[in-house]
Image (cartoon, rainbow, N blue to C red; front, side, top):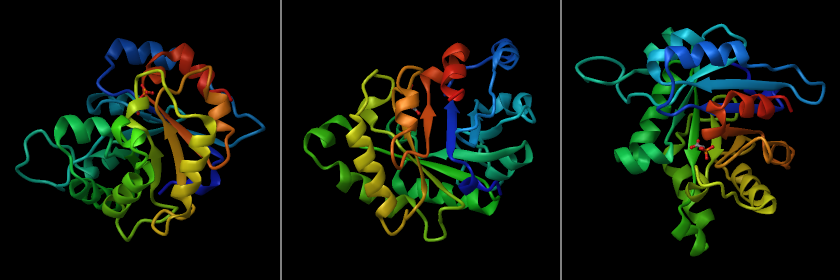
Length: 241
Ligand code: PGA
């Protein structure tokens, strides 16, 4: 298992349902990252499953965008963590709000996915976040606490799991919480018993103009980038801190 605690910042690219052979060819010939003296930085790219093999051994880590709760058998359309490991994945995003809201994933399913990741020494990147109504009703911390209680298995610790705080209203909207709000939520999460001192990433409308500031915030251990990660010029600016 990758030693995540040794990295100062972890930058995850979630390509979602975007990519093609041609896209990857051009992405790989244009991606530029230099080790900066300021940070030890880990880059994780999460492409759609069919393209994972095209990205291995290129200087960054690979993650799945989802995984099955099953290990093998008659489960048409599923991809197991064993398969992800076999093709070089060291991470897997679980519980993304798009999976929760569009594909009916429950906290219980997400916690089973975390366990399947642990079976294979894959580090789950668990997404949690409140929707706009919950934010307006000022119940964000209750929502996050509940998601953590239900989705984080007792076996989880700061070495084998990462949390991504992704306010749902900030995903793909160009809106972000204030920097103070991000600091407040991250320090809240990192003080909970179940997620004590875990690496916590921020996700939701991160782009080249706000990434440096977000990454420099206290208790922000990295970012999870969607839209900006599929624009290689934008992503190059994000990863060259
Ligand atoms: P965004 O998506 O960067 O496009 O807002 C983030 C995510 O959904 O992980």
